[in-house]
Length: 91
Image (tube, rainbow, N blue to C red; front, side, top):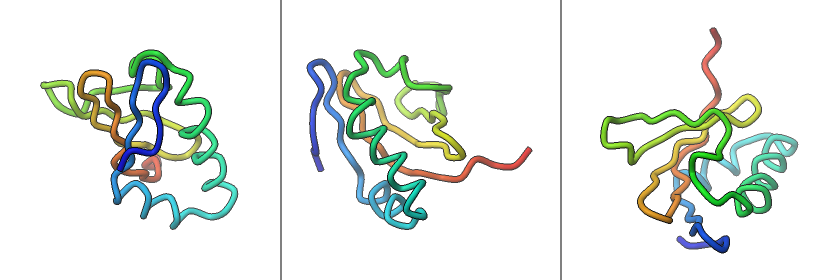
């Protein structure tokens, strides 16, 4: 599902991401929604995402932190696909 593109990156949303998003309370939903629809569109590289960490050796799957959540993504070339929103584990 393609919802929008920045000048350099194309942002896509997996159904699982959208399902996770609607499960959040309204404030958290709005904060994440605002980030992925405004701020994330302004980045020029996946490496500009806050707290980005690779999840596999191939460096296709990553996660980054936003507030109390980790957002899982798939990054291939200039396409970022948002896959999941999960609560950060308590340390």
